[in-house]
Length: 208
Image 1: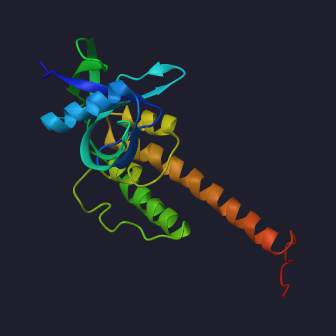
Image 2 (image 1 turned 60 degrees about the vertical axis):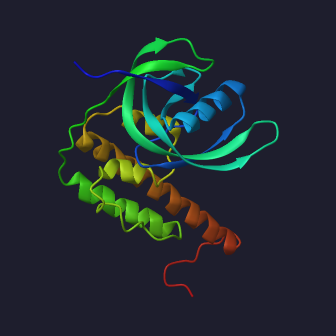
Image 3 (image 1 turned 135 degrees about the vertical axis):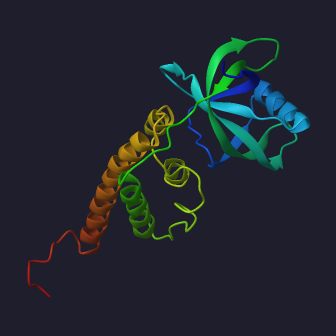
């Protein structure tokens, strides 16, 4: 039987993945209480993706990294790091914020050539965006899919879809498609900017 533990639940319109650093602005009273109790008890809470279709049952635990700023009215800016993927098996009660019993989601970490392809696409995207690829990606021992998802901005719905996959190979295959589409869009934007720089004119082949 999987071990269940009770944990605070934080529904948001964002998706956190293992290893990802994410800033959060805490303003609702119930979540201020959640963070205060998290700090006091050195506990985790779980971030769950929520949109118009409701709150998902698969999310990621969050470890508090730092409290960046506290405001006089009780609001605060914090930074969390993604821990492990969990599934909510039962909603519990007794706290001013949402809580639930969660269980860890186990992964099949086997993968094939899709890992090398995803890593190459990530590196190309980082360079095209004008930055340097993180040299730790692919070397840290963590699942490559989480490393890439933690560093590249994807729509929340896409991140959630990958978060719910329990196969590293399947996640990397999906990532290859997402990264390829992202590179195509970046190339189109680059061409548009270049045309704007040339007042909309395109140089003919062999032109100056």
